[in-house]
Image (cartoon, rainbow over all chains, first blue to last red; front, top):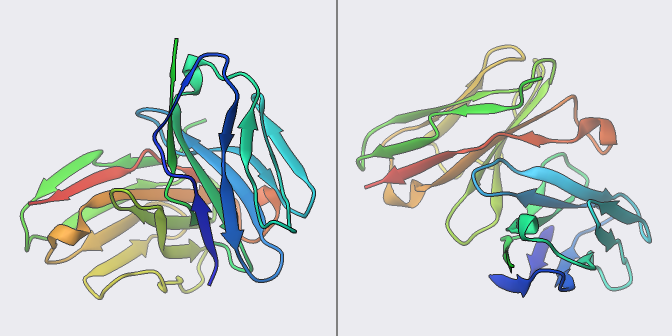
Length: 111
Length: 117
């Protein structure tokens, strides 16, 4: 069945550092891929998405490219801020309608 | 407008008791989803409602779990005879419809943290 694997956290970075959170997936067909973010005390929010191979999703300085050849959707940001501290979830939606999530990666950015 | 709301935000119960968790979706959203997140795990799909269609219950882990939805409004997730392994954050999401369209982005509530002692 469909599954998502993302790097384990927690990840601790200094402000302005480069961020990569790895995400790989297993799915039949052509899934849509998502990154969700959960800020402390808040609900999950959609951060970005890509619906087909080679699409790049971007939002708030974050980017992720749908790589079908490596079945990956790594999240990147060139310069993180303290306000980016949150838990990040990679997810896919295959032929159905429910989202299939990774376990989440906690990011802490220190001043 | 208001987002998805859930109540209670926290619930502590004793093993063997029944609990009810409530979700108020965004007004006008016909699709509603329940997910569970156990500690250190990703979100697991539990159940899906779409309008007046029969719900997809394929993710419910046991017959102790059930959910109802009145029309296109409030949903209640009920867990009977709770067990310690039911301890988790229960998340509700809603969307305008179903399928792959961006029209159908899922919006999540803040969750209910359930602790079974």
